[in-house]
Structure formats: C-alpha cells, structure tokens
Length: 77
Image (cartoon, rainbow, N blue to C red; front, side, top):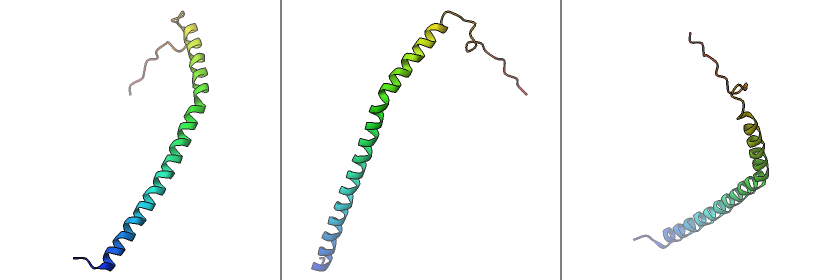
C-alpha cells in the first residue's frame, strides 16, 4: 500500500496534468475560432471568384478553338 506522501504527490501530479490539459484546450479553441473567422471572411471573395470563373467559362463554351482548349503534343525523349 502506498504511503501518504506518495498519494499526495500523485494527487498533485494529477491536478497539474488537469491544469495543463485545460490550458491546452483553451489554446486549441482559440486557434479553431481564429481559423473559422478567417474562412468566414474569405467567403465573399470566393463567391466573387466563382462568379468571375462562371462568366469566363460561359464565354469560352461557344468557341472550341480557344487557346485553353488546344492540346499540345508532348515530346518523349
């Protein structure tokens, strides 16, 4: 059976570990919130970029001879 000193040391160790774990959870929550805010702020830019790409692709659909639709032959050495 463990003596009283070992039990007190173990209780202190567990309390310290709980405190460290709690601090790590708060740090990770703050990082997650920051990442979510950054993604939310990028949504208008992504939507506008999507609209621009849709406009560009709709103008290129009529012409099959566009510069981006031509395939180049690859040289094999």
